[in-house]
Length: 323
Ligand code: KG4
Ligand code: ZN
Image 1 (cartoon, protein in one colour):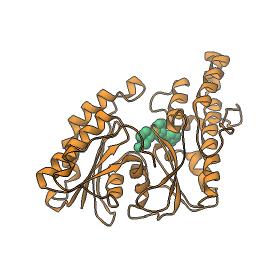
Image 2 (cartoon, rainbow, N blue to C red):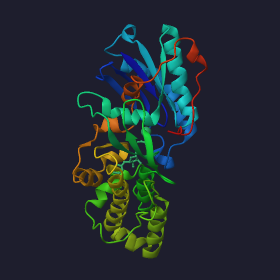
Image 3 (cartoon, protein in one colour):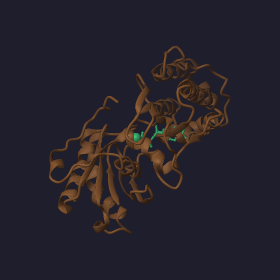
Image 4 (cartoon, rainbow, N blue to C red):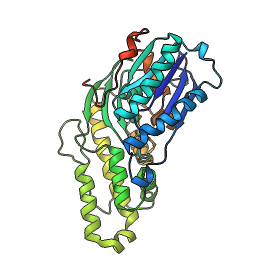
């Protein structure tokens, strides 16, 4: 059995997963303290991880004995370094005390490996779209060990575009679900927002879209913006989803099977558009799409673990590794 810890952003996560990919426990403590700042505050995130880490690990071991754990896994990066270090130190401590091996896992590979978990594993090869508040990535997954980056965002992440749009419309943080809910009652053709169609290849860009909404809201004025909020939300959501689907369609020419992960995978319109693409589509359950430790344990199954005491010098990294 694998005990995994994930603290790359603001969620403190621990999970136990079997070698066969069955999820025994999957605990997530969300911090919620960032809402009033309109985003994640790195120093707050680290402090909360420190406060929650032991309790979250304990809870993940509620029905399993630590004696049954044969491997400890942890997210090494990318993410907020101060946040990652809390998870890395916790994992090192547990592993070292038990003389267990430690597997250092890449967060993005974790999102990919969420698809390999029971009871409904999706086997490579496939194209994987990862869209969350922190990342937007198209990956070509040929095996369980890694992936090739086909495209990524040149500026904002897709979830960030949802959040910034929601903020401009006065909808709070994180705004994706609220914006999407409002959009359901609006007309997606009411306003034409850019989809960065001119960005060639498989990269994404959402900064222009956010600016277009900002100007539109200024032009309309407060009263008219409030009156047309549903149309604005629907048109804005439509632009984000079309931008995503446009690149996905290009990538499916390389590999006609699709997996979607990250918080934005919860989006109703994206799901509808993906289901209509005419290829097999796999979307893990919501708790495995957003940040979690079960996906880190899943990825650890194909990572070369370090033996005690080699991993004591293990460090976290902030930025995405070249893949
Ligand atoms: O994966 P996640 O929980 O956290 C990280 O960012 O790592 O993703 C959260 C993001 C937020 O930007 C949120 O607004 C967006 O996913 N999101 C949605 C929906 N649910 C969550 N965006 C659009 N529609 C949704 N239904
Ligand atoms: Zn993530």
